Length: 398
Image (cartoon, rainbow, N blue to C red; front, side, top):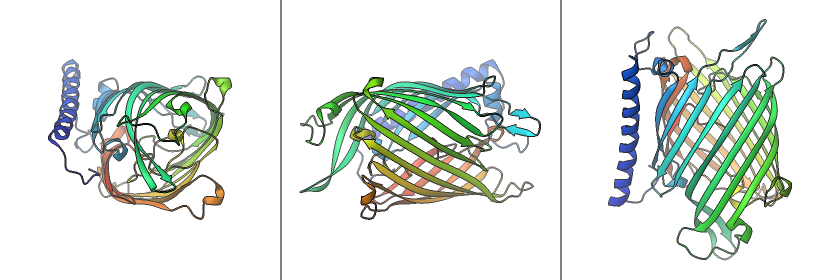
């Protein structure tokens, strides 16, 4: 856990309830499925614990319990996410083979130690006939989160906000021929009501408009994706860029533009198919830039393990991170990662802005061989403290 504070009896009770409810939901759902059909949790190849057949034989349904370890949300919490996964065959034309991600439908409900909660549902799918990938998501949340501001006389100060949010996300991109290139559009809507958690008067740097406002962004997307797997890739490249516009024409209370770009590159440095011992090297670049006056809670922030969300913000941020995974058996892996980044408001501030770093280690288990899905735990160290993360698939997901 990423905190050095002692837990009260109430906090320990909340955490125990989170875990109990998650395990109860998972056990009940599993028993219902098991009664309908006998499901093996052993792989047919190595007889190790494996959920591939469980997912396929249960028509893709997995009741996923999630332990939330984000420091910005209190360092601990629980969520239950009923997930429906439907495998898709790759698109084949001549000697060209393009993998198609599985269709995923998910519900989501969470509660954390700082009394944040969120509920939502979404779908990520492919219309094969038209070569279109789409994503839709909507939800409601009551989120408690800290933001940091550097003030002239007192320096950096933490402000604990409560945000009631209604997010809606729509995304569609078209495959360009039989290739790994995609282009499309996305739309983001968000309604936010803002207050300080202690009910004090809002600080002067918070505008009246930010207390209760609507954000409406429309944008264009271009993407290249040659990864061999969307859950835990072993090789391939994903490069993405989108440019969103928030404007009153779309019903927004703010006029600004947002550029977001990132790249994930995976390359095997050593492979041994006979023993399953592999060394997979990963590299990540991320660059974001906001032009105009966006609300402070939507400004880009350094997003790396070991650093709380929204801890380091600016209109511009850039980071580079590497992750090295060593599969020392077919099932078990060790992970080593580290990265640096900067957040600043103007390019002229780049030299004076501090480098923010994080690094850590972790472990993975191949939970579903047929889906190439690995899960595990990471321990990360940022500039202030340690944090731990439960990883389902990959830590690099956008």
